[in-house]
Image (cartoon, rainbow, N blue to C red; front, side, top):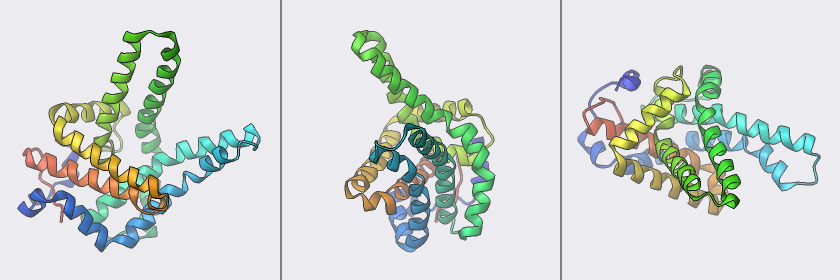
Length: 239
């Protein structure tokens, strides 16, 4: 798979192929401070939107920019989150200077490539809300199916984006849909695992702001690389 050429290295060790999930938790144990710092940096971008939602008495002219900031800032923050996970996964150093460098490198590509994808999900959700009361069942089913397929492919957005940040959003989406179509069961397993981690983090609140998103990103990253290595499409080094 050409999108992953920059990650080519040695073939994954057999132990990693058998235990990609436990390997992710082992990395979490060894790099806990750095992963927590990455997660906090990502979660902080949500604070303005949470303030806008928690205080409806604030003027609309203030609340809208707060929500807009969070919506836009989450794109480069997510790109940096996956980049940091990839670096730690390859046992590369990660410090504040590196994070700043990665932010500068991925800022514009993330807004150009990643932003349209959740935007499309939001548009489909809006259309579902609008169509629902009209009782147009075929259209409603179609929109829900498209949203499900789009969310299903989201398992691969992060890894595919990092492999080639300069690609367009539709190219990334096509590659993700192709992978989801070829490997439906592993994709579903990865998605359910990431959702379970996010749900546990959401229920504990503190877990969401400290570790859940970065752990979900780590699991998705390792599962994607191991999946492709198992299929002989990729040679990658995952310690």
